[in-house]
Image 1 (cartoon, rainbow, N blue to C red):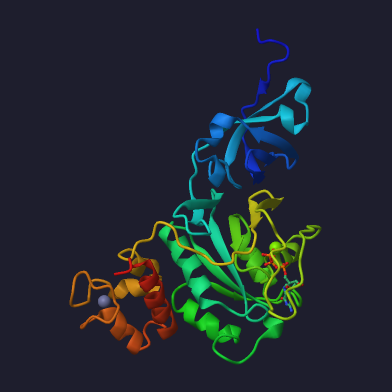
Image 2 (tube, rainbow, N blue to C red; image 1 turned 60 degrees about the vertical axis):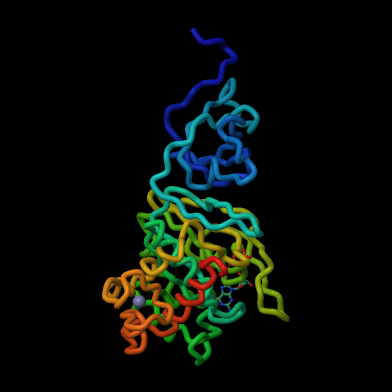
Amino acid sequence: MSRPDAPTPTSAPAVVARVDFGACVLLLDDGTLLAAHARGRLMGHRKSLGNAIVVGDRVHFERGRGGATHARDTVVSRVEPRRSHFSRRVSGRRAAEQVVAANLDQVVLVASVAEPGFSRGLADRVLCQAEHLGLPARLVLNKSDLAGSTPDTDPDAIRDDYERASIPTHRACAKTQEGLEALRQACLGRRSLFVGHSGVGKSTLLNALVPGLDLLEGAVNEKTGKGRHTTTAAVLVRPAPDFELIDTPGVRAFGPWGIGPADLDRTYREFRPFLGACRFRDCRHAGEPGCAVAEAAAAAHIAPRRYDSYRRLLSELEPES
Ligand SMILES: Nc1nc2c(ncn2[C@@H]2O[C@H](COP(=O)(O)OP(=O)(O)OP(=O)(O)O)[C@@H](O)[C@H]2O)c(=O)[nH]1
Ligand SMILES: [Mg+2]
Ligand SMILES: [Zn+2]
């Protein structure tokens, strides 16, 4: 017989909706939220990176005596193996992985066409990372009410580049609701991770997709048009069974993790038909003679702006000589 004050093990796992090192908020299958903390040994020696338990993890927990709802009394005892995850390089000089969220079905990269302006570098890095990790990705071009007519402010011009790369792209506006129904349809039946620069409207889009949700939104800086890092921690919401959205804090710069210079070409989906057709087997597509990828870009079979971004990212990934 167990002691009366022993914790009661529960078999049904819960999903981590929020986590701050060891302190978690768990989302139970019936939709209730429960505060809990993780056992020290679960956190491991790389505790400071916070990778041991991330939003989206499926965890087992034990309730304290009397089924108490106090965080101190509910303990996360086990994390189930992840079926997928999204990660990035930690910010700063350290070379380490930061796992952003786990058990994902897709990455929704949110960008805006103005305030802040579209950043091709960030978009391509996030898309490469998703591709590298085997996660489907889509691009949302928000704030279409602020659209311009240059290649980087016209959502239709941007969309053209990405759709040619087989990346589904949404022209959207959280303000006028443009494109929101299509985005909702694309997120139903899945768990989606929303990522992007600060101020592009991730939280506003989630609020628009989920009636009654009240995530904090923050005005961009009037002078710089940049966001103010309003969302400070990843949070998972489940408006309906099988419909889960994860909001994340805006990224300042996105460093890919685990992608070497030799892997990069495969993470640009539209390059694949041309890989293997270059004159040199180890061609990096950076100006070598007889390069099939460069020829495809010159003939506009590959969007030249995507090829330029590949070359830029490649030069950053290559060790300085
Ligand atoms: N004009 C316009 N403004 C929008 C649109 N969507 C969001 N905004 C505004 O953009 C600002 C930033 O929105 P947030 O939702 O806080 O942006 P975020 O991406 O969550 O930012 P972080 O939490 O800092 O990463 C707010 O003032 C929103 O009202 C849109 O479609 N059009
Ligand atoms: Mg936000
Ligand atoms: Zn080549």
